[in-house]
Length: 420
Image (cartoon, rainbow, N blue to C red):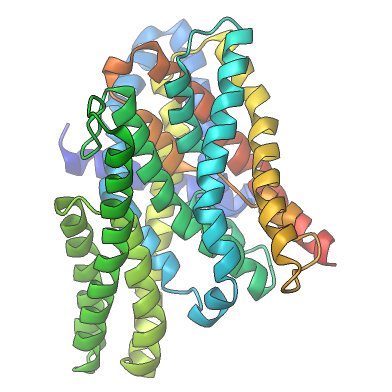
C-alpha cells in the first residue's frame, strides 16, 4: 500500500471519528477520537475471533504504519513548535525554577523510582525483566506528553500561571526524557539511532556526552533557528511568505537536528518560544500574527486527530498477557505516586521563596498526562530486546490509555474544583 493510500485512510477515519464525536459524543476532540478508535479496534479484534480475515487485514494495515517514525521523525516537530508558539515567555521565566527542576531532576528521579518499583513488581508476578529494561520503561513513561497535555489544557480553564507550569514542563521534559531513554538503551546493549556505546570503558562519560550533545546542542540549535527565523520575518511583511518561513524552519530545522545528533524536540520548543514571543512582538504585523496563529492551530488540530487515532489503532500490535496487563494496572497508581513525590519535593522547597496556586501539587500530578510519545518510544525498542519489548509495550499502552481517558477527562473538573 502506498504512503498516500495510508494517509488517505487515516485522514478519512480521523475526520469521520471527529465528526461522530462532535455531533453525538461531545468529548474533547482528541480523547473522543482515540476512544472511538479504541472501541472500533476492540470490536474488530472480537470480530476477528469469528472471522479471522478481518483481524488479519486490520493488523496488516496497522503494521504498515511506523508509529515511532511517524511521530518522532514527523508529526512531533510541528506539534511542539505549534505548542511553544503560544507560551508566554514572561510567564515561563516566572516559573523557570519549578519547570527546570521538573523537566530535569524530576524526569531522572521518576525514571529510577518507577523503574525500580516495576522491577520488584515484575519479579513478584513472575515476569522476567532485567533491571536495565525496567529503567528503560521508567524513562519512557516519566515525561508527560506535551501533545496530550496541550490538547486538554485548551478547554480546562486553568489560570495562566498554572497553565504555564504544566505546558512548560511538558514541552521540555519530553526532550530530556528522550535523552535519558537513548542513554539507557545504549547501556542495555541494543543502542539507538544515535545512542552511546554500551561496551565503552566509561559508560558514565558516554551518558554525560550524550546529554551535553543532545540536550545542550538541541537548545543551542533552537536558539540559532529562532534568531534566523526572527531576522527573516522582520525583513518582510507578507504573511504568505512568513508562514512558509515558519514551516521551513520546523521541517528543515528538525531534520538538521537529527543530522547533527542533537535533540530535535528541544530545538523546536526553543525555536517556537522565540518565534512566538520575540518575533511576534517585533517582527510581525497584526495580519501576520492572525494568519500564522490560524495556520499553526489548523496544523495542530489535524496532526492531533491523526495521532490519537493511531494510539487507538496500535492495540492490534500488542501481545496480550494476563500478568502483564495486571502489572500495567498496578503501575498506574505507582506512576501517579512517583509523580506526586517528584513534584511535592521541589514545590515544598520553592514555597519558601514564592507563592503557588492552591492544590498545585495535586493538579500538576493529575495533569501529568502520558501519551503518544511514550508509545512511540516503546515501539522504538529494537526487536532484539525480545520479551522485554513486548512487556514494556503492553504496560505502557495500559498506562497511556488510562492517562489520556481518565486523567484527561477529569482534569478540567479537578482544576475548577481545586481553584473554585
